[in-house]
Length: 354
Image (cartoon, rainbow, N blue to C red):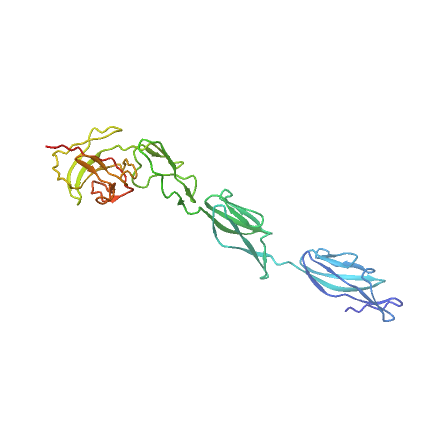
């Protein structure tokens, strides 16, 4: 409270309140006059307002002061030769000291999004969420783009640096975009038929496209080829290659073997054992051939309900003496002891009587 010198008849003294504000903020003042009859009256709109340092704060005719720069100034209100003063302190606002971004260095899948949050720490120790105020940038927009609110979207696999900037303060974060795990969804292929056109396409998900297809082990049947770009397997399978013929006892003893030569692209192929094998009547034998390329001809269920007789030889129906349609897999000739769908693999014997 400041006491004004008496002015006969009208205004005796006024009252102003001390204040402190930040640069850019406003502060309204109120002037109260006390008259010679001890009455009081609000004289804010009647008084003339001044600031001793307009570089620190300005004040308008309504008594509202605005901080301009840090410092102190005297605010005065005058009416009828009587004035009152108070001090206004203008303080510099706290400055941004650092920016922290969460989450730190995340990883997302292609096509996924990641929301970043920016938190600023000021010189007075206070913190603010600055996500909508900072400028967000991505160092590699081909990997991930980020919008004005800090939402990033992964494009292809790779890494990009996400930067946040405000008032000259910056922060960076690395965003890694990963491809989903590569999964080959084709679990089986359709059966092919020798000399018949074949087409099937391998399928996969995840990983990084375009895919490059290759054969990890083994080989495709003759006549078929893999398109390394599309994953298509096309062609017409053949049963070519060097074949080895074998004769076995029903117990798995190899009785004779011979390698085919001069094979043709189609039709029956024949080879003779170096020494004819004497066989016993009413005895089961197994004739087989080994295909180095893993190819074979088969008629499914051929022996399911009947055999084939060409006396004195008999091809047994499936189940008469174990399974017919016997086979095995291996790198070289082995006794075939597995069965599949009573198929006829079209293996026959040349039999001669003495």
